[in-house]
Image 1 (tube, rainbow over the protein chains, first blue to last red):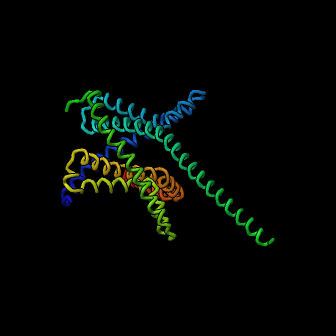
Image 2: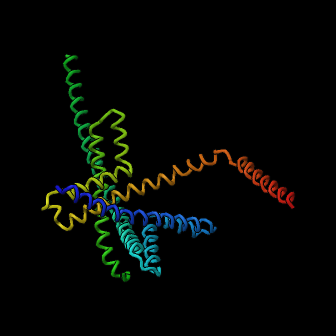
Image 3: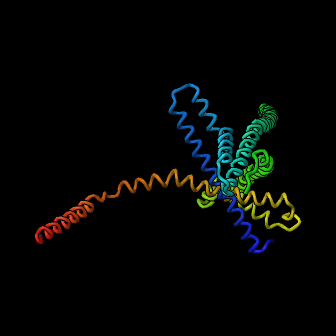
Amino acid sequence: MKSLDQNKDFLIHCAKTAGYRVVAEQITLATRAGIVAALLSIDSKYTENAEKIISSAFGKALVQFGVSMVLHQLPVDNPHVQALTYECLVSSIATGEGAVLNTAFSGVQDFVKNKILSIKDDSFAKVQESLSESVEEEIVQHAKTVSV
Amino acid sequence: MSKKSMIEMGKKAAIDAQYRVVTEQIGKVGQQGIMRLVQAGNFSSDQMKQIEKFLGSDLGLALVKFSAGLAIHNMPEEISGDARAARLAEEFTTDGMALAANTAIGSLVGEILPLLSGAIDSLPTPAPAARIAETTASDIVSESSDKVKGRV
């Protein structure tokens, strides 16, 4: 267990990094909204597809990468801007990777879920069959005894 | 402070992004696990249902990540001393804080700002007060000019 001061230092360090992350996220959101608004103002069939791409996770990654490139090209030698550039770059890579992983695993998850459900259904059907057979036999035996 | 090249930054960013992706995936799994635990309890009280709802939200995910980060950071030195574990703890805590802040900003922009602007619109306009101020100012000017004329 760390001491209170160590925890305090750790939280302050994390809060500083989180600040850059929040700013990067808000810049991305604003840029995306601006691009989507600009695309919607153009009346063309291609803009619909472009808007869908921008609104997706891959679009977000693309916008974040674009923002990081623009920030990197700014003629400013400021540590905050550099930190923001780096944050946008990390976010773009992470968003892209996350989207790929989610797309890949959603198919696998559905497959496994369907398999489990089908196994459950089969076993339930088998139990039902065996039960109905045994009940039928009992009924027949009971009818025989009654008739005798 | 000299600028780093984009390729140099990209190499370092790719490593940091791995930690972020792992954090995201573990966070989601952890949130779902806690949700299942709460759901398995079959609690009927409204308070537990509220807690369940909170855990399912973005703020719940932020809380899970933040707690996980602090938990890893406060683990025995054999575990938390490892550079990867330390980096993961930092990533969890930072992501939890950032997610909570982004959710708060999102709700502020989406819900509270329209309410505030509506409340400001419903306030009475300060036109009469402005007119009174204008008339008194003009009266003072005219009075002073009359006095000056009288002296002349």
